Image (cartoon, rainbow, N blue to C red; front, side, top):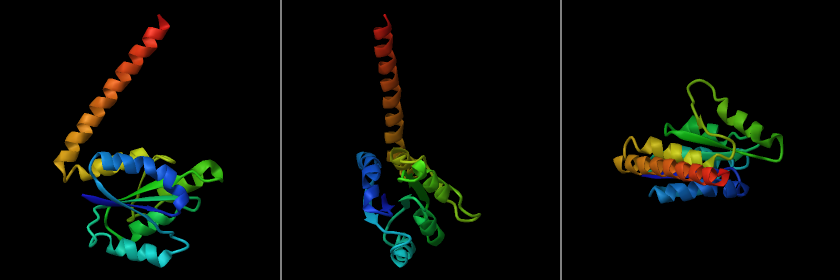
Length: 162
């Protein structure tokens, strides 16, 4: 199981890094690349065109501002593409979100929240878990751990209230 995280800029890495760590914890092989839809469009097209033959099963496209990268990638490959809108200095990332989520009919991009790299990683894991049952088991364990943490936090709050 191998995916690519493609960022429009290296400035996106602090956001991407959280999801990258999650993917590695689940044992997913990940390559991270900086490819700009606007500054290196032919490289973006070439990567998307070759992604499947390079062994990738899914792509997370992270981009800010005029966030066309995930859509450009999705327009070339039939691999699932998850768009990760990055909060930029303008419009608090709403521009990025709208650029990614408003795809034309026939070229879908799954989109997560602004700076939602953990959910992008978890969505990628969920998609891959259809093919890889071991990921499904890890996801079940992850969800159970979340329940335990919520229970423990509730208990801590209840103790403070006494």
